[in-house]
Image 1 (tube, rainbow, N blue to C red):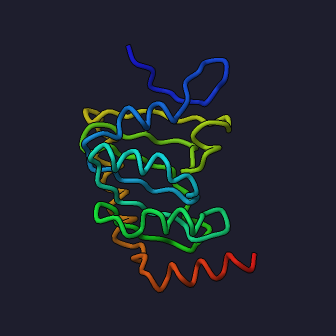
Image 2: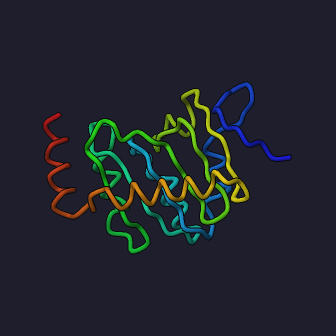
Image 3: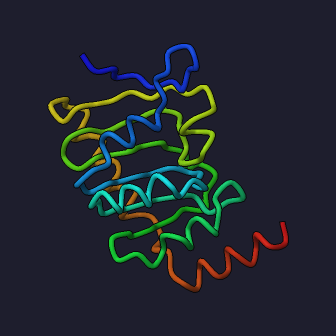
Length: 159
């Protein structure tokens, strides 16, 4: 039986990164996280024929360089919030699985921090609820434009 909990524990060796890599192949990937700075998993998912809808929070913990790296990819759409209250960590892999937990889309969240994330399969009633929540976030979030990204990059230069 596959492990359904990912904690990044060095004792259990159940790193979130391995689960993300396993499920992010040939699917539509829907991600809602407040903090984004680790672009490598998304680039790998794009190589693995995924399309990505990403919702982030524009804040100091989100990297404008990482956003810039994937922004112009035709298979990526990005929206954002600026409110501190946007704090989900939701990863949906097509119509198959979702992972919900505490990992941000950062290198520490994927490999170093002690985190707790749980896999939810599509046969769970909760899976549809998570898809609906993502769609609610998506519909309410602002579309990331070139102009907004430029402003965000300039703000970060002064931080």
